[in-house]
Length: 240
Image (cartoon, rainbow, N blue to C red; front, side, top):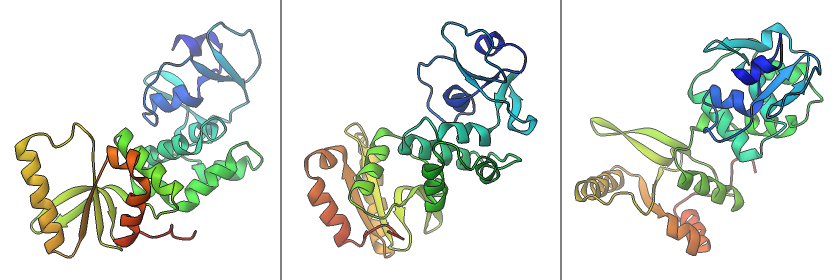
C-alpha cells in the first residue's frame, strides 16, 4: 500500500505485484510496481510505469487501488515468459475472474502492445481451460511435453471411477490415458501406496491406460519416457 501511496493520486498497483495480490502468481520477493498517469517524482524501491488508465481498467481490492485482472494479465504479457504467463491465465480461469472489459476486449483496445502475440497464442491453444499445475514437477512435465511436441493433458482433472470421483494429475480423456506424477517424497505411506495401486487397477479395469512418471525418469530417461507415452497413445499436439 505504501508503494501505491508514494505514487500520488491516481497511482495503482500493477504488473507482477498486482498479479500476486490477485493470486495469479506465487508470491516472491519483489519491489512494488505501480502505474501512474504522469511521471512525477520517482521513489526509491518502487518501479513506476506511466500510463493513463481508463476507469474501467482499475479497481480496489483490500483497500488497495489496483489494475483489474484483465488489465493485469495484459501488463504481464509484456514482462513474463510464456510458461509464467500461461500459469497466470490458468489461475484466472480457475478462479473464474471476470472483468468488463474482458481480456479479449483489452487486446482489441491495445492492438500494438508488446506481448500480445504470446497472449493470443496461449488463449488460442485453450491451455488456460486445461487446469492449473500445483507442483514444480507438474510444471516440469508440461515443459517436457511441449519440448517433445506431445499433446497436453487436462491437469488435476476429476474423473468418475465407479461410485466416486478421483482427481488425476494428467488426463487425456479422448485417449483414455491417465498419468500420475510422483515426486521423491510422494506416496511414502503404506496406506497411500495401497490406494494408489488400487486406483491404477480400477483405471485399467474400466478401459483406461494408467501410468506413473517420476522426477527421476524426467531427469535420466526423457527419450524413453517420450517413447512410452507415444506407445500408449499420447501423440503430437492437436493443431500442431
